[in-house]
Image 1 (cartoon, rainbow, N blue to C red):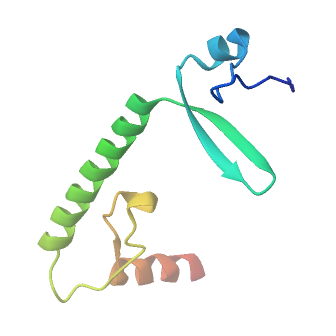
Image 2: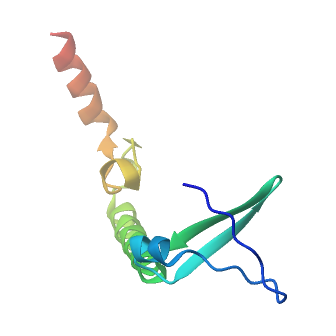
Length: 101
């Protein structure tokens, strides 16, 4: 849905109240694009919680990584894939061998 709004003499624009209620937030981010402006609703508390969770996962990953034996080769060592636990290369080879059987 599109709506034409007029800027005030101070450069302010008003978003339609119906739209504001739909997004359940009073905070928006404005992104300047080559051909215009993009306005997106944001929930700062939600963003802060996501960042706290990400930092907690990183700390847990570092703890796992530090406790891993130095000579162990690990693949797929990614937080987004499996919480940073990784898969020892020997286990991965066994998995592949089982598939070939």
